[in-house]
Length: 432
Image (cartoon, rainbow, N blue to C red; front, side, top):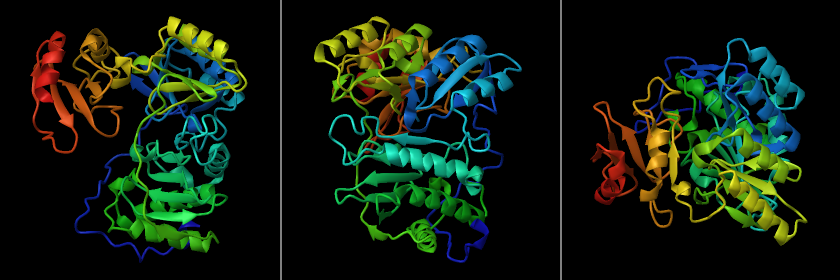
């Protein structure tokens, strides 16, 4: 189908700057492991962050048997295992396949789908996006063309509350008040309105249109934002593809949103917890599976939502106490909600510091309410940093750290040195 689409409509914009990747996409998966200083790393795609209790138990068993025993949440609601031994790939794939976590080996790295984690649980969304999630994942795994997407290409399914709008997904589907859906491309592209039933195939069509545009553009782009196309060109191409596939659509103004996950505590028919630095020990993961009633939902904000329909208030309070007892965050005012970090030393050879230890040691200098989040990075790559406004705390080549503010109205080139992490409070006062 891709070969039949015309490339004549794609015109580079003189204002746009294409990003041409000079190497293949090395994004890790479960069949392509990444070599790190602490052993091999596997990234398991969990569409929508949704896991059955049994699947969660299989992940814990795989981490215990093959890795360091811990599980790490990513900013896309996926799971990473670290410290994997040499030659464990076949056994890992076998475990995941048996649990239904590897439905298509040819598509395993492109199943990057985030979804509103409280959808259908708190009465705030316009629709439950779970049917969209199942349909889109199935369509992706059935598409030969989609196999060419990079492991970084991201789909977002927003139930209308706008919680995923700031994640800068490549394809965002958002429920609308009229019962339909808005299809948006990239972080700032225009939008198309489609019916609710057509939302999953329209999302796939948008991804395939991106691949066609990438080929016509003459670059090797991994994300929509990397294409050097004029304003609206990709949206127009998606519109032509939708027409060819018989999917009705019309242009509309793009709705705005934010990027914030559920606060810890009891929320609607669910419990929400935050995972400090996204790192889950075996006891923490085990307690999550014990409290869960059917499934777990991993969030893009390194948290976990546990649906609890029919559970009494007393039982929820008891469950939150159990989760807090193993070190998970259940307090909505915890400073951990504003602190993140890359893996740092000793897991990454490029890192200049043990950023997780420093972030933990300086937690007392961070106040949750009313401030920008802090992200600690071992080098300038800032792996895993959150989207949106933040304070970057980056390990410096000469030692110590440098702080900079990433937010409108701030000069990102301005930095404040932090020679001693214990002086974080003073550095924060100076930079803000």
